[in-house]
Image 1: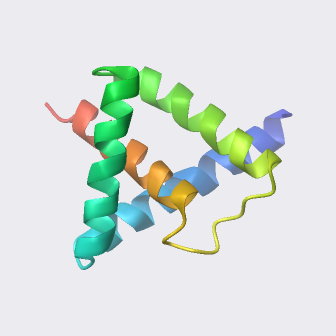
Image 2: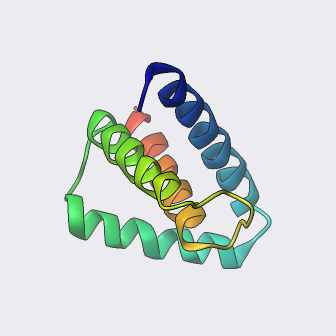
Image 3: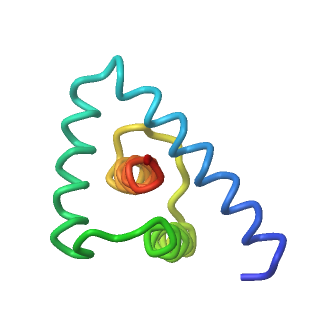
Length: 95
């Protein structure tokens, strides 16, 4: 992935994550799905720091886009996974 694509991907993922985290407040179903992904990620990654989560997020999103995924549903698996990682990054950054 070249620099421009990587930057676009980063912005898109940030926007997806921020929108999803905000949407969780009014959507118990989305919040529950994110909780399940967070639990799965903790099983897979342990207690990752912000840098590890960013690396995971970047490779996960790049793979998803390479498979042809596009964020047009706030209920698909990839969207929820991205929101879960962003939620964990917020948690990791909190004092």
